[in-house]
Image (cartoon, rainbow, N blue to C red; front, top):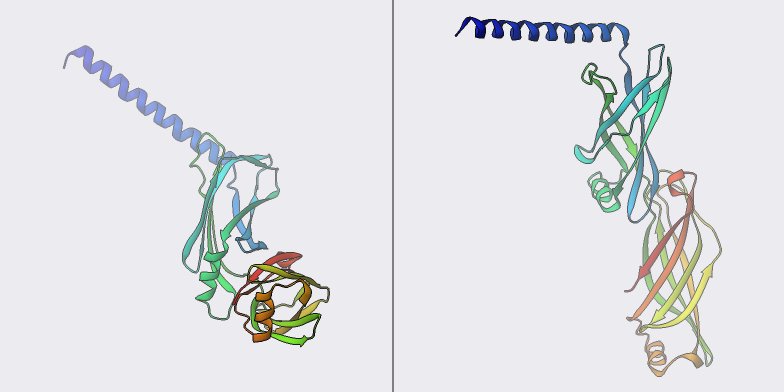
Length: 284
């Protein structure tokens, strides 16, 4: 190596050493100026339940111990239920935490209703799931890895369940020359540890694909926790409006080709099950 080449190599090494020292100095200065913020997973709650999905809300508390506002560049999170990872997300949407204050970060998300029901089935008669949350906040600063702002939380969450509905046999209550009256028993079970109300039952009864009767039950049925009750659904039809096939079915008692379509309103003190409309279709 020539004298000029050796001199150039020595100069490059010296420059890299200076730059490395400056970077370390800047990092040390930055650490001395910026106090480490913290993030805490505060809560996981249910926002809604329907036949398609269960909505949940993750709340995180970000604390800024500095005397000036602090900008964050986003966060990542992973959530496991009963040791199964169902939720994973990330956002690059930044936000600011005021000086010497804390800010709440709300992260709404949904899980498929069938997935949640599978998890609950594995818990027997309990509607409590174990959860585990990992969250990671990103600091909006030149040295992004200066602070490792992570949070971890384990806990349990109660998942409210929809009332369980089953039906008994269709029974003829009365029959004369002008009309026939039927009754169908609808059994409703409340699988929750809190009370629910069943009200505003609108229904349509069909036989052989032909609509026979539209009805409504205005009474409110109150179910305490884990209670089962029976709601009797009345059906009255005019024989003058029915075809010969329907009359034959009534006389023979062969009710194998009927269907009930109903809409039931569920209400409770639990926010996720408030004024929830549930469609029901039953055909034996």
